[in-house]
Image 1 (cartoon, rainbow, N blue to C red):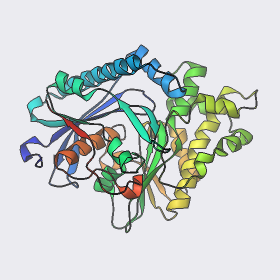
Image 2 (image 1 turned 135 degrees about the horizontal axis):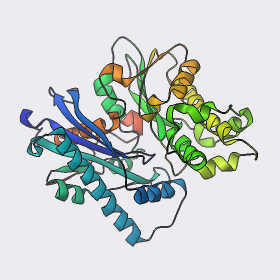
Image 3 (image 1 turned 30 degrees about the vertical axis):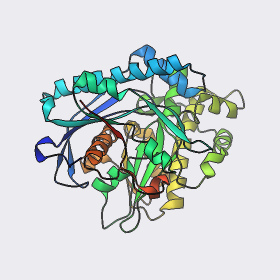
Image 4 (image 1 turned 180 degrees about the vertical axis):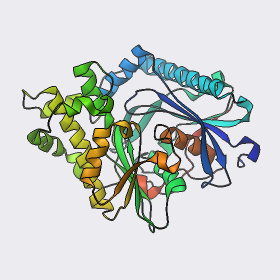
Amino acid sequence: MPAPSSRAELFLGLISGTSADGIDAALVRFHGDGPHARPELLHGRTHGWDAALRARLVALGQQAQALTLDAVGELDVRIGRAFADAANASIAAAGIDRTAIAAIGSHGQTLRHRPQGEAPFTLQLGDAHVIAERCGLPVVADFRRRDVAAGGHGAPLVPAFHAAVLHAADEDRAVLNLGGIANLTLLPAHGDVRGFDTGPANGLMDAWCLRHTGQPFDAGGRFAAQGRVDPALLARLLAEPWFALAPPKSTGRDQFHLDWVEAALAGGESPADVQATLLALTVRTVADALHATQPATSRVIVCGGGVHNPLLMAALADAMPAATIESSALHGLDPDFVEAMAFAWLAREHLAGRPGNLPAVTGAAGPRVLGALYPA
């Protein structure tokens, strides 16, 4: 398929991340040609999940549960409807003529991510047929499975977008996404782009906070600030073998969940101390990973929900004193919508017939055009 015309350089990106805290929608205009076209966020909004549906998604992510085929099929449609509603609401709020939108790039909701083993797979739900039908627009979806089929992890995929818009020729940079899972993109001034997950971030902290305070996330890091880091607990959590794996690697809520935390508890820890320790776990695993893979990093550009946690940002700065730690907002990218913008970009790359993965990041056998097109 030919590259989209200059008239139709609008794309809408949709994603619900590991935390399942909402569906992020980003309406993006791309200025220029090729993968390095400058993205402009015209409208970004996070659309809340139906409470019952979100509770089910979180429960499925926190622990392995058997699902009937009927249940999987129903979830696929319900998630697709929610994504379509989010897209339509964003288009209406932006006041954009939908016929100007070239396509929707929909990540979906990850239900399982198993990129290793005899039959590796990754599963994102959110029926793209439903989205296309309800929105009347082409949809590009199912981005991860082609990379897995090519021997990769199918994740992280956002580093290709980071490289296209945030690389600098005069300094070694890293982009840190603090979503449900933390992941790093390494952008050396000269050399190959790399990227990988470092471990849990908001997913564990949000789940622990919800259980013990009734709040869906630790606003401002106030709950963690009430506690102290438990060194013994932190050491037990860090003993998880996954942390010692070399990149490429990826993970998800199905690996780092509250049952995993509780298995490391000695008993008697205060909830606030556990929250503080989970925050320290994120900081330690990010800092260790960056030191091991790109020790000369001079700037860490942070995006994702964690950028709004001042305690977390301050702890990262303390752990990496040689680097400047700053929000992606300083580079023209709203930190809350970088991932959604990336899936708008990936949809654009698909329509242009260009690869969307970086084999050095995912471990795939080579560059691949990602996703499948579902016509309007």
